[in-house]
Image (cartoon, rainbow, N blue to C red; front, top):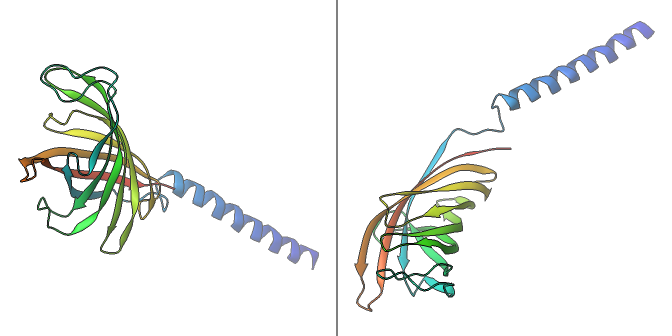
Length: 187
């Protein structure tokens, strides 16, 4: 009886060790903790003076031919839409800050730290982003450094590009940008 009990304990221990070793190998090789690459495409509706406001005045005045000075900090909440049409379905918001870290007569570079808040068609969560951007360039890229909800532990990148810039009847400037976020979820 002692040998049968010993074999049962040994067998259970062997099964446990096999399961633990298998799960560690599976995780290291990209098993259940990794997801397939994902893509999220959206448009941002931006209006200076309405949903983008100066938070901190520049430390150095604007360079001639520009509107922003070094150190100027903006706080914003842009509406995220499904298409470039401002009347298209709202997918969520992008909220964050932008600080002018370099400006010349030809380009202004912003350090960006923001959160993409998505609540659309049953998908809810956030993507945290950071990086630098010159919005006069043909495109720019942010690092996706985390997320919550449906995007918990997301890593990847988000590429933005300008779409349109128009004057509104009230005299503000309405800017539309398009973004393609590419990311994976990690445990």
